Image (cartoon, rainbow, N blue to C red; front, side, top):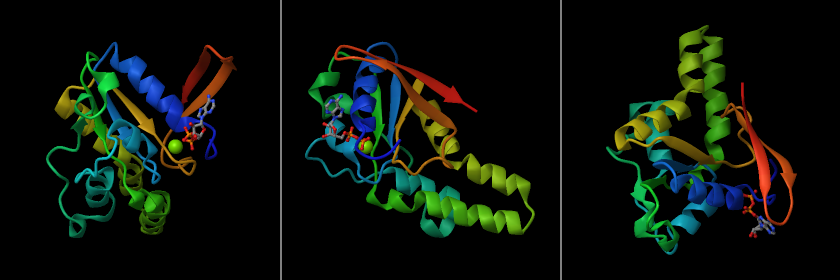
Length: 174
Ligand SMILES: Nc1ncnc2c1ncn2[C@@H]1O[C@H](COP(=O)(O)OP(=O)(O)O)[C@@H](O)[C@H]1O
Ligand SMILES: [Mg+2]
């Protein structure tokens, strides 16, 4: 979905609702970092998503992923007091280059005829998020993305009926 239509606002509200029922990993994948600013206001987190993604996508020259990627949301956002465990992987402005980096690596792997490398590149984001969700025992993962992720994710959130009180939606996976 294009910028400014309410993805981050909807993601914040979904995070709040879901964290009332189950432990949740929230990943801010948008270079604008609005989700991080909302869940961790006035903070400049040292750890962010790019530190985990770059070693997977670009190799060890880009450093090692930190052993833990998340911050406990209730420490920074009062609304999450009393919710189940909800943790955030903060966003990074450098994520603006993620889709083009992914595309570039895919082209190299394709040119070398290496389908397994293509698969592991396509799964890189999923691998990072699944590993972290396992580490913290999260029962669900919620991602807030930029509009440029058609090739980086395989999920679409399709709004259904919306009025002033409610909004139904469908999550498609393919
Ligand atoms: N349902 C809504 N009604 C009115 N304003 C909204 C609604 N949802 C979001 N906004 C406002 O629209 C602007 C863009 O929303 P945002 O969630 O940041 O969009 P996106 O993440 O898609 O770029 C923000 O100022 C936000 O407060
Ligand atoms: Mg946004």
